[in-house]
Image 1 (cartoon, helix red, strand yellow):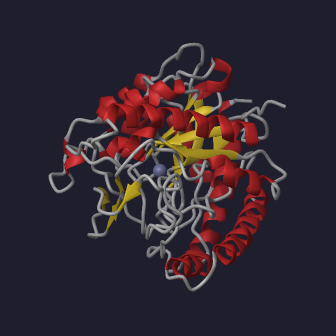
Image 2: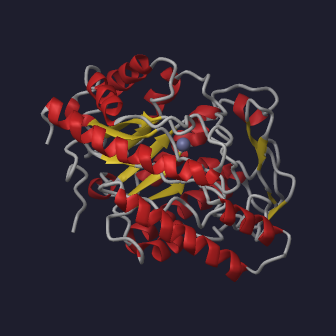
Length: 389
Ligand SMILES: [Zn+2]
């Protein structure tokens, strides 16, 4: 049966994807990296975390849930490594790639480096989704990584002798399409494409050369090549997510304004967009930027614009009233029938994350579920107030 995102809440509401991994799972990832435990032992711990995540997710009342990405090294790296230290590296890759993101506290995320082709994913999102669906009774969404992010495996100005950048990127578009189709085939109700590198590509940070290379139009083109392979009916359930990145409760590109990114991103013919807004310095400006740039027809679909109402890096849970107020305010700028609600980002995009603002990943998990419940409740309240059903 087709999933109707307005069922239960009137205004559609949907998570991004990740949850903090329990301390025990983070320890298991580290033990797997050093060869102290087997893959099967790591998978046991992942399975426990998945069961717990889905049970608690369903208890929030959310009409659509995610598995918290407990199987993954991260939203960005599952196609090429099983842990953030690089264990089970994709056979096309080696060490020594470029930095993906630099965070304000000085920590950074580095990528492996593409060494040869043809590049194929190690793992597709559907591989983990299939395992997670066994525990779910509610519809599930699945996040997949954008081809633009994976393209960073080939550093700028590096040329491989037998595998051109054009061929690599063409393979990536094929792989991303396959990732999305497999997720729908496995049973995903919705699939959203994580595009965290969109905002970062406008940072122009000389310490991180790829952010200073004007790559946004090219990134948008790669994602559009994927999205345009789907029918309007399929695209209605394909979203694109933007944020300022998130790790260890900090952002990599929060200072980059939305005015260049959002109009460009909205040119993608996706059915919906998931846009960080709750932690933005000027929320009204964000809502207005969205409202000023919405499209009524994206090649046969009428996109829905989901605004972030949950600040994932802030340990204070939002109240349903605060969520409701944010959505009612957003409706001053965005037509209410085109509005949805979401979390600003995943709650913990990378597997190893101590969640310093919360004091512990286990505590951060509990707060995340409170925040999700508030999002759902507050969205219902806003739908009542605005008369959306
Ligand atoms: Zn995000």
